[in-house]
Image 1 (tube, rainbow, N blue to C red):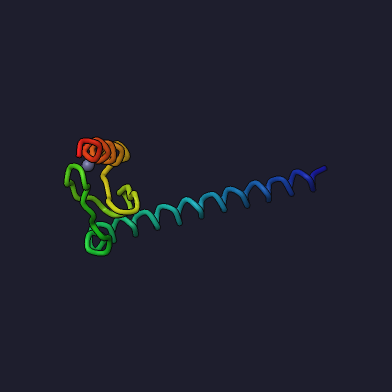
Image 2 (tube, rainbow, N blue to C red):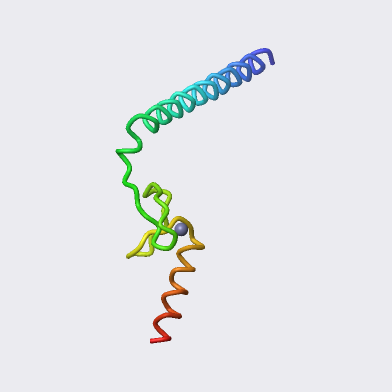
Length: 90
Ligand SMILES: [Zn+2]
């Protein structure tokens, strides 16, 4: 019986260590990312322009419809609606 309690304790300690290590690695990666974001992040990531409102944003945050980029899904839909109403007027 005592052996089982000891085994459970060992497993528990193992999980606590694993959890702590994961947290430490997570925080370290996060800090590293923050450091790169502030120093070279701006030049490393391509900036794109919203086809509707013209705001500049990182490519990873932009919405891409295959031709144009947008700052939000709403602007992408708005842009397409505007285009379709224009084409029906012609
Ligand atoms: Zn926009």
